[in-house]
Length: 162
Image 1 (cartoon, rainbow, N blue to C red):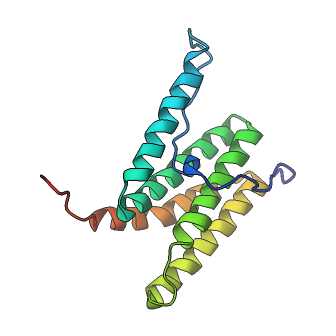
Image 2 (cartoon, rainbow, N blue to C red):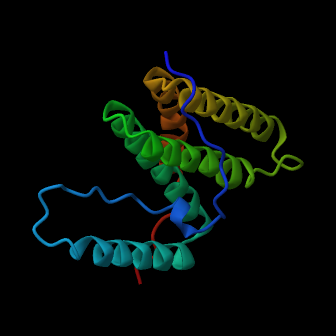
């Protein structure tokens, strides 16, 4: 088990927390297409964030978390330490600075406190996964988050059909 490949989060909070990562192909015929596609993805995410309801923002955080875990697992399999680190840091920031920070601990009662504890545990496991290159810890975090994501999706407000 390797424990010396880790990094410390130092990125500012931006809409990039929501943005899916676009995989690059070594077989791409147009090397200039990637920056342009990244630009379009960023504009799409920023537009989505600025026009999203609070419920949609949380759904976007859940989606970003799942995407970050998938990217981290892929990077771990391909021995891409820097990509793995950035993806796990992104997932941890989504949990801490997005989901956990949005909890109303005074008005949310026991449910908010339980969610806060769960988010703290997930952040701990993400840190351990990063330090130990532990794909099983990433799977555990995903398994803990999936029921919350599904429950959140099930309480979506009806779409206004004007």
